[in-house]
Amino acid sequence: MTSTTLLTNPLREGLQVERSADPCVVVIFGATGDLTKRKLIPALFSLAEHQLLPPSFGIVGFSRKAWTDDGFRQAQREFIEDERLNTPVWKSFEEGMFYCPSEFSDASGYRKLGELLARIDRERGTQTNRLFYLSTPPDAYSEIIRQLGAARLVAGSGSKNWTRIIIEKPFGRDTESAHALNEEVNSVFREDQVYRIDHYLGKETVQNIMVFRFANGIFEPIWNRRYIDHVQIAVAETLGVEHRASYYERSGAARDMIQNHMLQVLNLVAMEPPAAMDADAIRDEKTKVLRAIRPVSVEEARKYSVRAQYSQGFVAGKQVPAYRQEEGVDPASLTETYCAFKLLIDNWRWAGVPFYLRSGKRLPKRVSEIAIQFKSVPHLLFGQTADDQLEPNILVLKIQPDEGITLRFGAKLPGQSMHIRWVNMEFRYGTSFGVKTPEAYERLLHDCMRGDATLFARRDAVETAWKVIMPYLTAWRQSPEKDLPLYEAGSQGPVEADALISKDGHRWRRL
Image 1: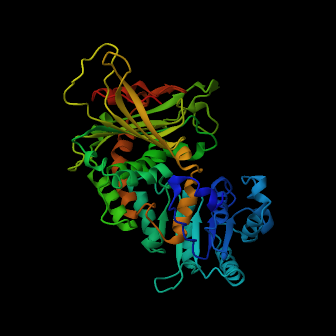
Image 2 (image 1 turned 45 degrees about the vertical axis):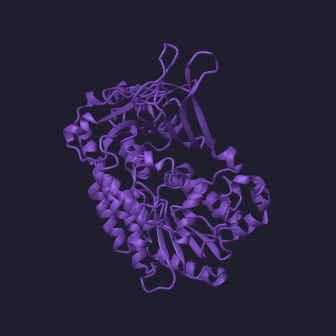
Image 3 (image 1 turned 90 degrees about the vertical axis):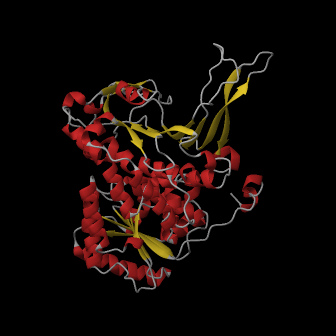
């Protein structure tokens, strides 16, 4: 799309062109995996197409497979459309791709990597700027970090060039392991060099939460306990465990979704206005929210949470197996594929406002959304009849699949009588701005190359998030097998989750 085309949409007038990233080399550990070819390479190539990568740029794949440079390049073509491959941009982009085969524990492999990086610096002018991306199983993180330090591939504080590292989730599996991993990372990398990635924070609607709240004078004054009744945050998937059984059996829904993605979203909804639009100020406010979440005992955690596992059922008209029948899953597994939480934030803004979080697999629709339900009007001026359904106003921020914002309000039904119907006012990114929103990894990779850590998790936030959910994980671990409810695949979830929210006089939004 040309700049001329962009300006034909009046909503994009005044759009500023983002600056290109610094010259650098991106080194992807675990480069033969799905994340690289499905997300990372397509995202980097899209940045190149939009002229957001510098001419002095390179990519190095580092993994166990005995590939060559050409083999690595060929493998990355799979998820790029043919018409995009046959362009000068792809040809130039592909020429900057290299491969270094090695075991993660082999010191000689890191020496070869250092030699390859030095050659790329000479030939492509990448100025010794390095971005290391850990796209590996979590049990490889510590070894790779130690080897990078031992090989002296990490720039020190006195260097005029930069070194950064992106670490994929999960960042630990409990408070202790997260703290231990942070200690290992910070023994080699300074905290300002560490970028703990959560791709949810790269989604347009998630980024738009702060703009919606702090750039519009009509919403922030009512964004508090006086006007908001409760908040629901939902992430629903139609897919099952797929090919991730070995990971999911160790993780479960709470570790996979709640501790990272959903608490990060909650932070943006609940945070106070930052003192400035910079990474430290924003992340300070987000961490304050986590610290304000009411701590619970293990006994209270049982009352404020539900876990469940999907059984056999139908999704989109197709019969699907139960979780315990999935390939690679223990037939007696107690891993939750659904979880729901009620959290309370003990601060001045949110005292008494419950935040309900739920996430599950094999649900009827793929939906990620934040629903802000406002309090009902204090006095009904209009005579309520059986035909009228007087309901509270709801503001819904849709993260996926259709990114946008919906506000529900009451309106008079045309006619002589006074009848009220509920209507929606909608904003959608695709139709309003006339462009496809960029993939989350595009934004996050570009931010990291520019040194902007705003959308990345800081050490204290990661450890505090684990502290929030540990009582629930402990309570579940201590519960007997009979306490693990089942829900039919394709249903709205377990009835126990309905009871969790209905005892407060609320109900889940239908997926």
